[in-house]
Length: 420
Image 1: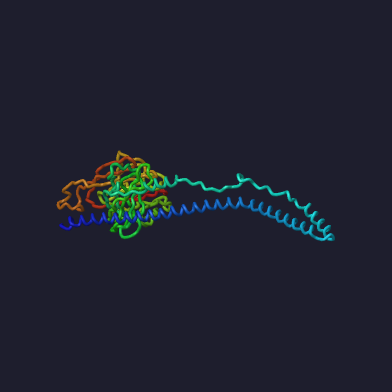
Image 2: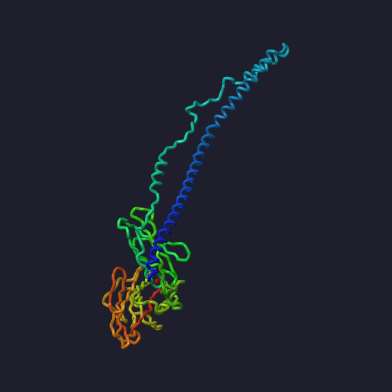
């Protein structure tokens, strides 16, 4: 008893130092990645702008180079003709006539007064770069407000309840000034693995399915404020587990196809005339729990259809509308020990969720030694919910039970029922 008070300060110290170390590493990693990304973006933009300068320069210089070459060619030709004329003047009388004739002929062929048009400076590109400081100011403003450090997250996990093959996670908002738009729940195995999203939405509880019994899992939750895109810091991770085996349908039943986890049953057309009742693989429903049937596909409604719980499995029964069973038909009728109640629930449609909750109503003494299995008056208070309505009644049994089977009977193919 002395170890618990002594260990609390140590655990608190470890949480403060551990979370501070993680926050420190997270900040360094994030800003390093951000710096690398910004540098890459600036380098890419600079490369694009420099390429634009190169293209303008090349396109503008090409005609000017051609013009320069024409002018140089004309000047060289005139210079050669001038030298040829000087030679003709200095030569003897015998050769002078021929050389002057050749000079005159070439001079007539060369257009010394014709030059290509040279554009004026205002028509020639003058390359410049337009840059301003608005990006720097905007970046400085955004960087100054980027990220935050908090000592307490605005939401914390409040409760973890074990369910068959699942854990019900409940959380609450601890910061009254934080206006929540959505919550985000993640979980992972405590020994290894990465966190994965399991729920995003406005509700403050969620049933995490498909968990292996006797295996620790870590759960954490965060929130997103109204009109915001970023998520809040994560809550302190909480460890939860379930010792209860998951609900499973019994394999090998005629007329039904089961999923790999055996928690989804689909009514097939392999036995359209008679399929009987599909029961659970074991009596895994205990009083005090909530048993849920989720309808993910529908078929034709039949008054013989039934979804519910029962004391035992009767292989020859065609429906749960019998003794020692409570059920709801797909048309919304409720049956207790084979008798239809006057109260009726909404018809079962695509997406419907039918829930069964039961609690023991104490009628002691049941027998001389208070043993449930010895018989006597045993009463369960049953609540069946469907849609936004529910019915509550007492189910009287001739003997005590501590666990129940569940089952369904669907006359026509197409129905698909998930149980959890």
